[in-house]
Length: 236
Image (cartoon, rainbow, N blue to C red; front, side, top):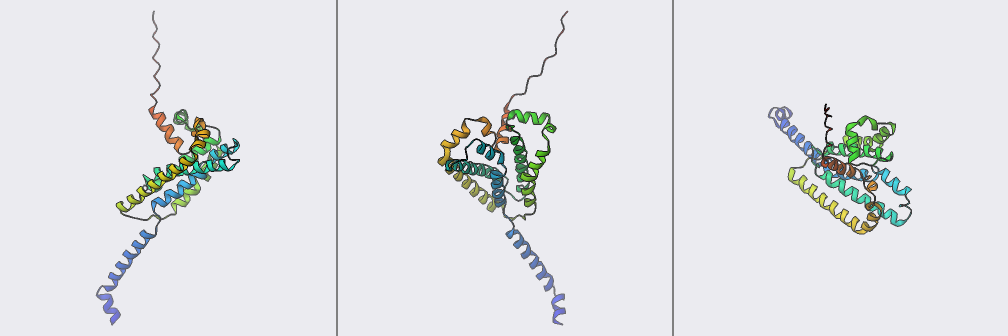
């Protein structure tokens, strides 16, 4: 009789609703924050994503001493901080994953081109726009599999924490400030060595992904279009 009365008075539906709301709150609270995903992807891009840069430094003998490893660590921190600041602009629940997918894809493409000895600059961007199919090969598929597919599959499986705009904005801003501090410390400790190794070589600077793509795109956009050839005029 008591159980029947409990069901007919609507207490059971009320409890079901409260349980559903509580479950949704726990789900939103236990998901991964967009900033945490930006951190993980930034670490991946600063290490695995830039493997042609580390390989080139090793071949040049720059990683044969403790100071060389300190140089590589400083560069990794600067790359991590730069990618992190860029990712923080999109570290919102609806935009973080698409933005990270794009960064991973761009870095994978750059890794393939740099492994072939091709520097990412404005000229290359123009060539890619003109003949994109000329750069596809089996090694490109391998780079896409390692640099892009592995972290992308991980990202797709991660639930996202849902915070209000003010809370998420505060976390994004705090992360940007931490990235700026980390980059400033790394540059302050290794600026002379970085300038000696990277400053005098445009090709070396063009190997830092995905920052090289952003720089190349901006340079390509700033270049004036080539003037069209005027038709010849036959005079009698």
